[in-house]
Length: 538
Image (tube, rainbow, N blue to C red):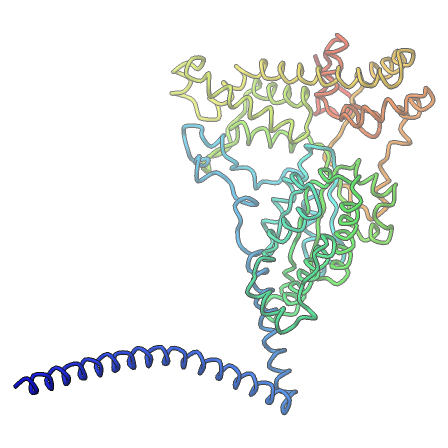
């Protein structure tokens, strides 16, 4: 019995040991299975790589063709992406706020706060000429739009590119370096330097052509080359090539660039050279906007080579003509008919108010915009207290607006002239420090005389090529000849830098002329713009 019991215990222990051994074998088999999978994967990769190498060695032509086809697909995708982006409607370029504030059919006057007239063109002659010569293919020149600050250069080109299918608009207002230029330009034309998957694949298969350069100027050159290839794709497309749809690249506000920086100087030369090349190849249209002072410097100092400048189609955007200025004020002040209503007869008082604005501040579009916005804002804030209920109830919106304008125009214009007076005083103080007190009486006598003369600065529709821009320079002006003889060259140069006078020595705007007379405590002279031969009224 004892022997039987011991035999049973021995069998139980043996079965337990076998169970533990089987569990250990199962665990080891599981671990072996995971290792086997990794081993198999490594072997497959090795076999596949070997097969590719052998296939490439046996059929090099086919492999090369496959890689070239893949590279072409990547390039085509990248170029199509750029073109698609440039054809989208970007609200920060061409959009307005009518959907926010309402349009001309609104009755509460909120339309005045919107940009409902932002797409209207007031430099008609310049716009018509640019449409005919620049914005139609073949593109054989690039555009340069010059003019004083606030003359409406950016506004004009923004309105014109709305008519183009492909466009990009880059403003240099916040540009500090070539790196910023590259980043902003790539963003505007839809090129993504940060597409790491494409860069990785290209770097793996096509190491020789992968963009590995890091210097900013080389990166800018690479970006312009990509843009050129995309434009070539568009030109030779069956769908778009016949229509002559060429991308328009606007580089706005070049005056904000620091040309004292050699790298920015080199980048500017590269951009002009690219514009020249694209124009001759009829692939894309570049348009630069800058002040006439900067363009003069570029030409005189030979910053851009003369061969490149000769290809430019130069427009000078000056003050609005009298009729265009009147139309602009009517639009901005709410005097134009709204909602398709028939034109209303304008009262004599309203005509005098509009003429008073033009004769006080001139016809530079930004000055008119600033004054009209101040009048509208002032009118809105005083509408409930100054406008009789009978006026708002029985008159049309345009007539009610005319009443509000007449009630607030004096305070707004007085403030504008006072600000111009302060600007003139500051500029003259700086000039006095440079030329000394002995020459100041001579300068003042010249300025007193030209402040009593009317210089008509009608809308400029000047179209010239290259160095022909030197046409209009006031080196031949009688005022500047007299100033040169009196040793006042430096004085007038400083006054031009402060935008007090023009290149011909006349006052830059009517506002500056009136501000000067206010500073000198001379009687205010308000010239009538309707009379082209110097008629004036008080």
